[in-house]
Image (cartoon, rainbow, N blue to C red; front, side, top):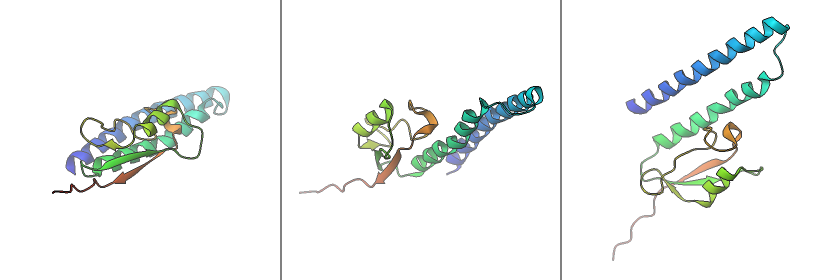
Length: 129
């Protein structure tokens, strides 16, 4: 679990850098205009939603490597990427049909607005004759 902790810590540091840059830009805009312009609101919401993708990545990495993953669509409008992920079910954590993204990680067309969710299953036991 030490490697997983290092990977998550590294991602948090990277995201904090983006957030610090955003805060600096918002402060400059506030000084220039007397308030924070409306254009900063969607970006602030994106940062808040971005934590969901990091959470999903952490859960996936903590699962046993033989876990089967099902990409589920939430009851909302979906982007083409999410529809493709759902159509590709089931996914593996390793091997030929490996899950390469998670909901909310920013890699889908809907970026961090993704409302899909993952379901995890143990592999079916092999039946021997």
